[in-house]
Length: 188
Image (tube, rainbow, N blue to C red; front, side, top):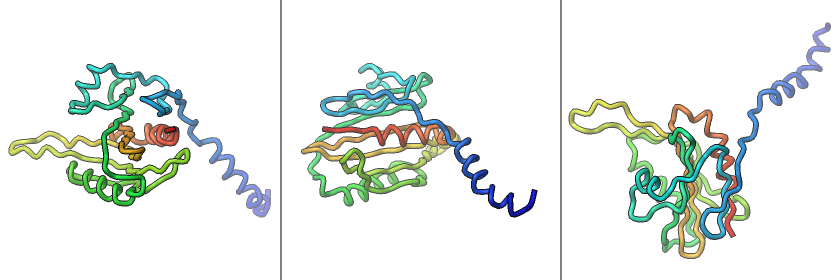
């Protein structure tokens, strides 16, 4: 075969290789969460009962819903809280929540930090890998590393927070699913 023939086939070979190795789209189940919110929940994830949410997410205001994979290591959560911000404040919210995340963890590597429109609604989007070091005097535990994709949106006087949380060493496995979950959010 001549080199010119091989060069003409090269684009087809590249295209075939890309198509052959594209990961299948994650399977999501459209799930209602609270009033007027639907979210694609990954297949195999189950809703945590109220006592499970309270144990895993101890806070004065519990999330609207938490879905966890069978091992309990990966979660999707939806929270709601009152807010004085409006839907015109997204640029400010991006700065505030980015700074808050940086102050919460020992180290943060941001993968995405922007404002996106999904299903005709704007969201502040922060995707990152965080490390939380053991800073106790005699602490010698390895840092806890997490992959997280968080989206914030305002509706009326409420802030909604959508979070996908997985171990950092499983980021490659869960990142496409996290992104698909966040693209599935629909609010009326």
